[in-house]
Image (cartoon, rainbow over all chains, first blue to last red; front, top):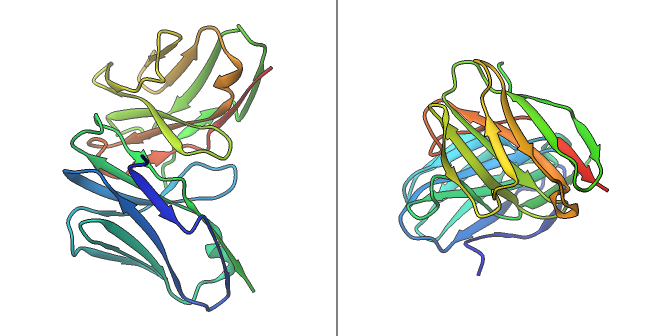
Length: 111
Length: 114
């Protein structure tokens, strides 16, 4: 069973059409939940870290939230340059000091 | 902004050959990592390195893999005898304090084993 599940796998939006990406996790003892952005042929680029339920962080058009079971990445009025794959990763007590990644959500924003 | 540099960007090798993937982490970072991503699959942890020794490794990181920090700037991943299933994008990453903070990833080395 996957420890980190992201949905949807792919999302197509029109420019300006707000939406949310979901990351659900089943691990216990969460010590950090991370959102990364990955462009084709590139390495993941850090966006946010959330450490406890109720925490929220914002950066430009992106806002990340965390509950005890899931995290949401809200995208407000997206632009074509927001097109990328968004990766969620968790760090927890049993992960032996490393990040466990989800499969990602591929976001396409059309002008 | 400082970045993690990886070379080469692409590496093609024959099955059974040795390859060395090279990385230059950000200069004031203390923790170094290798992750890999097989096409269409998740990013997977291989190994973490701190204070000149391996701190954690995954099941993927078997005896065919090794890491080294030969000098004050480079961090390398060696695969002794490559297999077809080693074909993947290999990412080097570094961080200041440890894996529970943001990692800076390089652009990756695409390894193709024929």
